[in-house]
Image 1 (cartoon, rainbow, N blue to C red):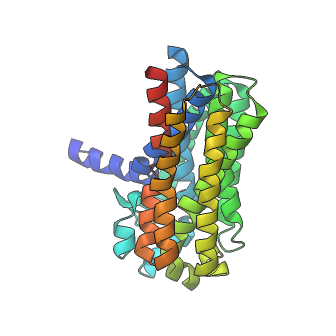
Image 2 (cartoon, one colour):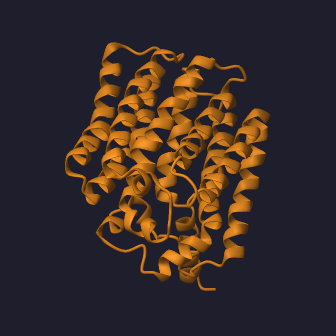
Length: 309
């Protein structure tokens, strides 16, 4: 295999794990750990933690495509993964569903997910055995989420729990006995952000395909008007819970930081959700999804700046 061919093949595996989007999501556990600890952890913990986080997200995103391989193939054969909304999807920066498109075989994709999963499991155990339990639960919930595609719109609740798992595990990686109140608000922030800013808007853009294949998503089952209510309500709760999260952390913040976090949530979440509420356009749903994807990264930047300066 030539170097160019090797790089192209590797790009398909990164696409399987949605790495561009995954790297942004990886700032969520980093933010959670720093926010609770109130300082940067030891260098060894940082190195192992970063490797574990990268491996964990790489494995779980790939697992999603492995489990959904048959439904993705059916979508592709019916002309799916096309259109302006999909073209602007942050997940489409590389290739959408490379296994379904025949760019990666199913056994190779499974091996990729398993390999990174083992790396994540070893790192999680080294950091704190509780992290390994949370990672295992997250993988199981991700599998359940995929299998509920044609069963219930409330699988979105499972998705919220999966996204919260990484952040909660990161807190246990730096402190074996964190505050239960802090963990509760951390869960609520990520849970409502995932439902209102990621899951429901993304399903909104897929509504025609999902209707054709009998999927039971929030937009298909509850309709767009109920979906827009859920999106806006969930993101309002995420922004409010985030203020409480910062309040109950071990990092001291002045009033300016609370205003900054409120402005960040308003710009990345509330404003695009309100635009979608008014327009009900698919392109605005994808715009919300893309902008909301940067919310954890923005929070990480705020916390990092506070600790550095």
